[in-house]
Image (tube, rainbow, N blue to C red; front, side, top):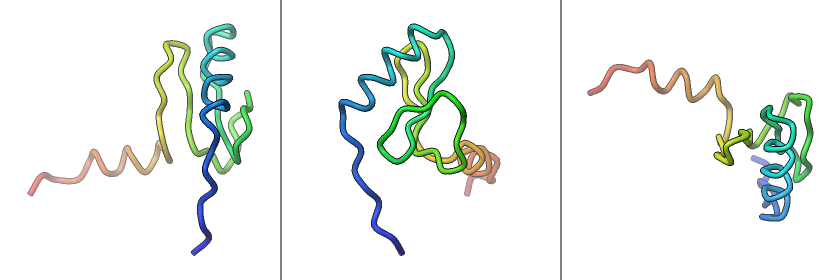
Length: 68
């Protein structure tokens, strides 16, 4: 298993500003802020400033599991 690199808080601050200016979500991947969705996204930053971490499809599958 490869160690996951820590992303600088500055990258998320830049992503929040860019998302707010563009009015669309932006992505943080490999410590960089990008506007096109890359295959390995670590976070998606929304125009309202909220951050969605990890893989969206994985979160979707987790929500569909039956409660025990």
